[in-house]
Length: 141
Length: 365
Image (cartoon, rainbow over all chains, first blue to last red):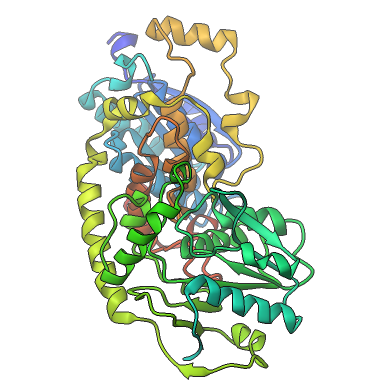
């Protein structure tokens, strides 16, 4: 498989859980598609919906927001706010006819290296069947 | 509920009420629409009771959303003397949202409002709104929706000012010299306690309100169905926002778009030469000004949940983008998601500033 045919995913990884989960996947030598561009954030609630929208409009094929499982947030309840914001963003994507399936919210803990790989692999496969983000072909945004 | 009956036309009745509040030293000022020049109307803060003759609270115009103006007045501290505020229902709802967002304070404000029949686009001031008044009041009497009103007003369901202290009943009002001012709250009662005049028992004109509401809902269905936002996709969005000149007037006119440090006004949103080069390498061309779709959809994500549907955005748009229609239609879905009506209750939290531990399990995995 060439680099070009892989979807590009922009991932926002919470420092305390998902980023550590990704790290664990790495030290465990687990294999996953090289489709993810990780961005570390201090908490999933740091992700302004504008980040997701900007990545989407810039042509990312998928946007993955990850954080600690509900109840496990390092800052007590940051991820509950994230979930509401995500539900809202997804709703607006749907209502404007944008492909809401290109954005995804997943909870991955620091011990779930395997789950991190599974999420990225599954999301990559889904995006492959969806094809390229059509925004790439749109010139005058 | 108790009501005050004043044998005068609506504007005169409100003037008389305010004057009596002034004379009994219940209020120190009035915030209301006033005639400021031959043809112009604007909101004004009036402390000299001689100037009360200039106010025209029911003139069908909204040159600015009063919620935003009142937020400016009370953001740092509440007004020191009681002020009577005469505004439309959507302006009151906007103010309530701003209070929740800690951008305004309600202390010392007495709210007078009325069952609202809508306003004309502000540009109608150019030809003189006076020409329109006859048709306007005639349509209030017959309970019809005037087609040249703002679109936001033609499709508005929340035109009863539930949160006002005193409500002037205007729905279906005939041209008789009789105005009914309902005293809705304890606060309203306190302000009027020693007011002389005839107190009667009265209620909202419920049947006429329901009649109007069902007409507006039909109109809304039609308008929303015509604008197929769900089919927009990126093609539709670039088409409709392709007219945007990036003036940000919609955001400045919007009462609930309140951030002082807006991302879209910041240098962070400007393209550096390297970003520009990157974009050019990717697409081969860049639309200037950049990011109009990003701006509008981004703003929609930010204010959708608190959109009160006043229509200031469409009114302000110099290139006639149907900003209101797109925003309100999408916002309605978002608000339904959280079962939230902006400005309905002051103690109801804005959905994004609170959460339940078990909810929205369908969006996560």
